[in-house]
Image (cartoon, rainbow, N blue to C red; front, side, top):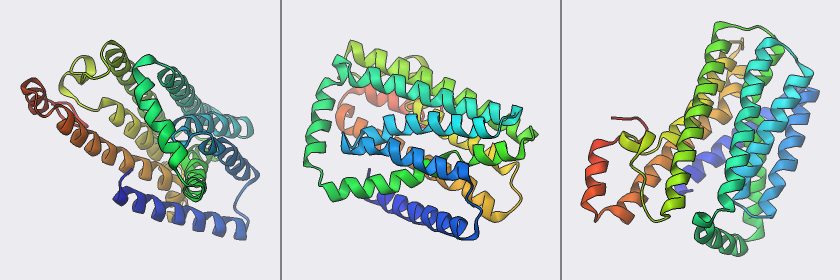
Length: 274
């Protein structure tokens, strides 16, 4: 995570804390919202096991827990669509992350991660814990508003479809990339979805966030509620754009001397296919 995106994250986390403080003060923070916060606090504790786990395992577990929590307290067709998509996303991400971190192709990278984790100061982990806890708390606020309205609006249907399509896209992209890495950890992938598209997995993640925002914004009735809906998904969208740019820079350093890769770069798009 670069310095610029860290600054952006800090600003977004501060906004989320202010929004929470206001909601708690005026009494609009519901028992389910408190449960979402508690779930995020527990899931984010994995940062103290290994800091990287907060970005995959904590994220996945919180999507599962908060999706199930919202659905259980506000059952409806609308909540079933959005919450089940969130749960499905969490299950897919957890399974993929679990398998990848134990794969031979990921072993060298895992060694570097473990070393970086051991060198990371505790205050940095605590700060990361606080910020990500708020991000995970607010991530499914769109699902909460959809469940609270219990109305299957066209926006909710479109948002749910976008979420499901994005989960499928990201799942296929992750599977194809990991299969390629299992064959040759040092090679770049230029087949399947990646034939004319360098980061379909990141677009899948962005699509999930866009789907959440579409669904949530279709049922809110105020600017304040709209802010609550978009704040976390918007940050993750910005993060994914930044990650795609960073991945392009890393690929250039790693493969830039190869004529075949330079040709691939010319015929492929970053976040969108050419």
